[in-house]
Length: 403
Image (cartoon, rainbow, N blue to C red; front, side, top):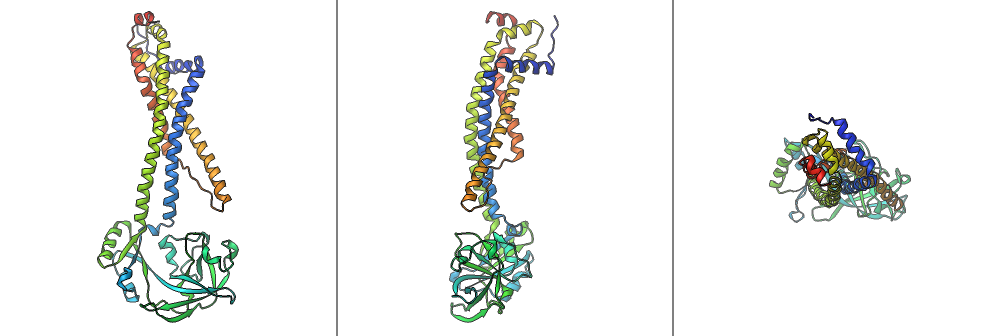
């Protein structure tokens, strides 16, 4: 009798028949595989979620990534004044400059007792370049007047960190000092200053960030300057130049790079734990395929007697194993994504209950879903390779003898 090559549809039909004849064993094998895949997916999603949350806190604005903060060491007693600012603006690789003055200030509402606060006097571009954005309120434009205030400053003023506090007018006074910290001038706000934004960060000390155009006098000098590079390619060159001129330099992109490295390590570690669970489930799948082979030796003999080739028998076991792996992967993806969404909902409810914002702690990249499905089929294929190889090597006589 000539060899009959089995078609793909026939291979699939014979493979599916195994799920009908041994449904409980097939279900438990697929479930074990699904749990392993779901574990990998959940742990990797946790790593990506942590990365998104951490880097998202740092990458609040695009401009902040190519902006550096420069200042002189405090022990040098060197101050940044207007001529130096104008000189920095002429640097070829500099796109924008935003100075920051730091002086003590006094704020009060409707003639009440004054509250001493740390005061940063900035240009409106400060928020865009620094990446520090109000949690409540709007990011100011270049023509805006007003101030952004920390939530800790509002407490002594008997104000709350809510939208109802926005646009409340405060009287403001800044005490300008010389390079020896001697107060030489008091400058008042041109008019009562409205609160334009609130930073809801309990770890931030009582601080007010006031727009320079809201004061009657310009600051005599500055402590820090935000310098935006023209592009990321010249950022390193510009930083080296400032370091050579004696400045201390801090760039947000360095924080982002370090944070990405840390979160990548965390993701890899979590993935290793997940893969360990996947290996355990793969061993169970291999055991299922091996038992299936031992139970179907007689069937292999019949197939070969009817003309099936070694290639057909091998493909039969490999298709069955790959199909089982794919089903396990699909089940794992559904369990993993569903479990992640459920956990996100629980975490968000808890976070909202304690006054925070909703949090997506588990974030699954879609490319990883396709990778994990492909990986599950590969695991199934490898689990079925040895039983398939054994089955293909049996002759009809051996198969009937081993029955």
